[in-house]
Amino acid sequence: MKLAGVTLDHLYTCYKNVGTPVPTDLLSSVRDTARHKGWLEASDTNAISVTVGGENHVEHDLPRAPVSE
Image (tube, rainbow, N blue to C red; front, side):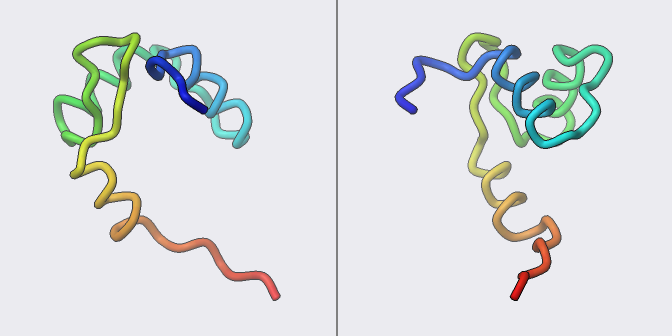
C-alpha cells in the first residue's frame, strides 16, 4: 500500500474490519505489546511496525486457520 507509516488509526480500522473488539485504550495496548512481547516497534506511533520476533510469532506460533475445501 506504500504507506508512510502505520498509525493507531490503521490498527483501529484493522480491528473493525476483522470483527475483533478494539481495546479500550489502543495506545496502551500497542505500547504494552511492544514492551512486554517485543512483537511491535512503537516508539513512534505514526510509524508502528512489526519486529522480526512479531513476524516469527505470526508465521510460526499462531494457530493456522482451517483450510476450506
